[in-house]
Image (cartoon, rainbow, N blue to C red; front, side, top):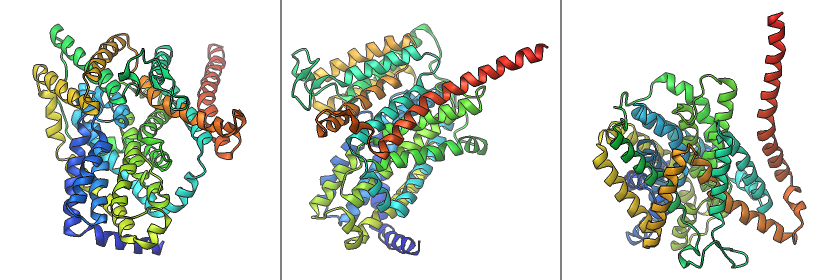
Length: 511
């Protein structure tokens, strides 16, 4: 432990220099703005600034501090558009919209923004402490995950989706099936066969995730806004308090901690991603709250606990993805893969030796995560009132703004009008699905998890020439399969037992 404090002291001596403090502040601000804009995301934000940092001849530790601040800033910024206009700034903020947007419509936009900023801070802080204490140990644990283990993890994540089914499981299952179907469009990565492209070259790369998210959330939301303004319904209610109170902190505290731990563990796994982490955290919290407080749970309708847990998880996951990058030289996420390019520009090879050879880089980065996280909280809390005033913007001005931001976000991916047409078509489909009360979250998660699940299943089976035994041979796989079964069976069993107890008590009471 003394060694850790010594290393952290070295790191803070690097991160607290005036240059690095200024860089961390600039990166945090830019990251927040990039996170707000749908379609850009942390990968694009980091990729745009990477050559700029190198051209400015910044020291390697300063470049990493800048890009890390942008990365975690994006995770903070993604929640803002999710809460205010129901348009997730990035994929990991989808779960935030489920309860954040209903809170905004109930006049609690300020509370939603401030409590989500606090949860993001706690999630990132827990993950940074985790990196400082157990990074090498966790990296060795992550190495135990092969394709079979990742497939089992995806199955576990799908089983957690059952927690999102709500009161309409058939519609939720239909949405998840549509998401899975969309994930199969494009060229098969293994055989090169075109799947469901209808001889269109534009579909050969599949349907872009950004196009689907913006179409289903942003365009359909605009159509609903226009419909409500025409029919005279109130679109949003005036905002009330701008800050959370201690009762709300206490109410969300354990959910925030659980989300942070789930997010950190998932973040350590290379490739799993913050989207999976936030989905698992949300479904876990929903199950626990509905079991302990069935009358007070209002998930999907503006429950503050459904907002805090996924926000803590996606920030913890982003921070946790630095673990495999620093200790193994394996990118934990797409964004950290880009950041490894920065190290390559400086002829630095990440891995276990980096801790010994360049401690100022490793511990300077870890210390900057503490500092950048505090800066982001300090930036976001005072600006809650400014963000919340967006709700007072009239529909005639808000809709063109959303149209502009969404169009730029989609067009920036491939610069083709086909994506714009696809966005509008998906928006109309999303509008119809929402009118039929079909939930969008299972559809998006089906799209994300379906591709990862298929690729890992194929890799696992190719190792054994088709022998499926590899899927449940290792202790990690067995543990994940058991967890998946427990997620499905335990709630049903508890409901049956509760029904039997209620049935047994009624005759006794009547007697």
